[in-house]
Length: 150
Image (tube, rainbow, N blue to C red):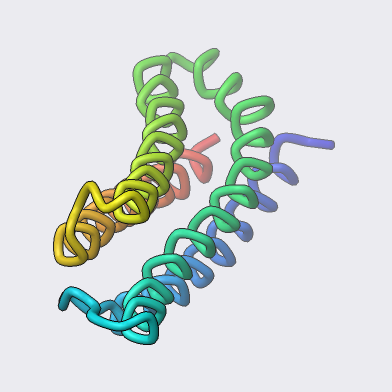
């Protein structure tokens, strides 16, 4: 497969991934901050947060397949063309997304074992999600620009 075909495929995937991430972000509107008092309220409180984590986790699984193609074919070419520092930054983004997703998982676990409040859980999960969104948005923008130059 030629580099141009791989690049075109990756850029098309960027569009699909971006649209999917926007759909995931809609869950944020359902998040509540009040401490639940009953089992029903607890379920209602946790559902959007667990949905946000679960759908983000599935997204990152798809993103990993995408990353393999980037790292195997395009990043190598970029490094050979003198863009090593940019390649390292993009690779670091891939790792940061994994770390942030793991942070979300830990936050849900902390709430489960009553180590944090409902408000803290909601605020921290949303903050973490915003960090992932910022990385993904900037990452895809950089790749779209750089990949087209190859």
